[in-house]
Length: 288
Image (cartoon, rainbow, N blue to C red; front, side, top):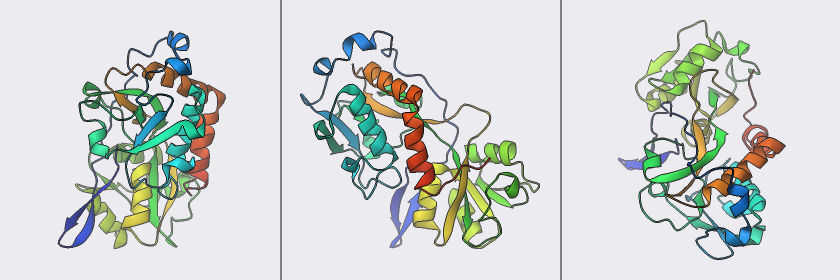
C-alpha cells in the first residue's frame, strides 16, 4: 500500500511515501473454502458487535477511495466496495458501523476492534504473519501524471506517450511498466526518491511521471499544483499488487467475505464500482 503520510520538516508539510516495489500477490487465508456457504448465515457470523458489521478505515479518508472524508456515504471506491460486501453478507446500510483505524496499526499484531478494515492495504506475506486478508478487491494500476497544458497532458492512448520523457522511481513497479507497456523511444529518467521525480516534473525537466494510481491521486491533489492524471494502465507482466480487506488473524469471517467478493466479481458489480469511482468520476481514463 502506498497511502501517503505527511511529516513536518522545517515547518513545511512534506510527503513521505514508501517506494512502490512489487508486492507478491498471495491467496486468501486457508479458511476460505467451499464450506463458506454453509456457515455464512448472517445470524451465525462471528462479529465484533452483535448485529453490526464493523468496518475500519483511517482518517482522513482520501478521495477517490471515499467521498468528502465520509466513509458512511457509500460514495468513493472503497466505501462502495465495503457496502457491496456488507449487502452480500446480509447487512443493510444502517447495520454497518465505521471505526477509525490508523493505517499502520491496522496490520499490527493483536486483537482488532473491527470485523474488517478497508484502506488501500496491499496484501503481502509479511503482513499475513500478523493478520488475515480477503481475496484482492483491487489490482493496482499505474497512473501517468503530467502538467496541465503540456504536450502530453491530452494523450488518450499509450502510443501518444512514446515520445515523452518519463520519470520514475528506481526499484518500483512503475519502472517495469513504463519499459514493458509504454516502451518510450527515450529511456526513462530514473530517480532514487519519488520526490526527485516530482521536482523534475515541476521544473519541466521531464514530460510526465508514472507512479502507482493511488499515489497519482495524491500527487495531483497535494503535491503538484496544475497537474493532472493523464490516464491509467495495467502492467502486462509480473505479479500484480492487490489491495485486500484486512481481518484479525484467525477471523472466521474471511471465507464468507471471499464468497461475497467472488459474487461481486462474477456479476461484474465490482468492475462497475471500479469504473465509476477510479476511472470516470476520478478523471483517470484507461490508456490502451
